[in-house]
Length: 141
Image (cartoon, rainbow, N blue to C red):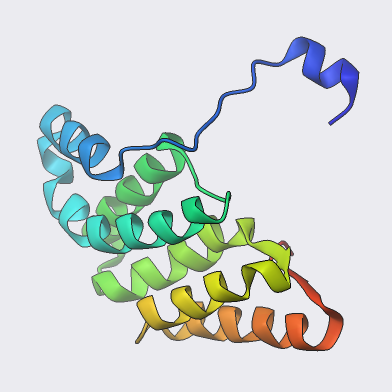
């Protein structure tokens, strides 16, 4: 970021995010999100843990958007929860991934943790292939 942007910004360190605690408070405040929370908690907690360990964690806004979209989909589109999780991981969470050989373990861990999520695994395999071929990877489109 440029100095001008940093002068006007409040930079917030999001490396210490309590995913389960935030999800509990979210469903306490909004009981209609209980099922969406249940569908989101395990994948969000797992993926956040791996990404946080590599300096790529995400914050509360993304977590809330993830849960709220799960609730929206369940009410209006009625896709199965794994399909929604798969879409959201690719579209909202994993777009943050970028790095070099130092992050190979992150890609490997995420690939194992996201077993069965076809789009997520396809993206992670593409990033691994980019890392193999170019020595770095970036998920942003």
